[in-house]
Image (cartoon, rainbow, N blue to C red):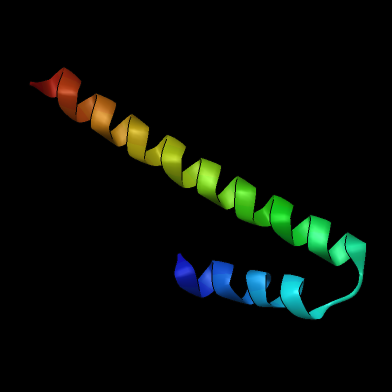
Amino acid sequence: MASIIKPLEDEIKTKSSYWVKIRNRLYISILNNSINSIVNTIIQKKINEM
């Protein structure tokens, strides 16, 4: 995950374009939310199996 997010964060720091900064922050947010959702789903499935 870090290998995906790190380049986006680096681009936020180095680019002056607000569009690039907003786009990359959106990408990072979507990635984090997706991973949280997947983890929560897996945990819920495991709990239901018990």
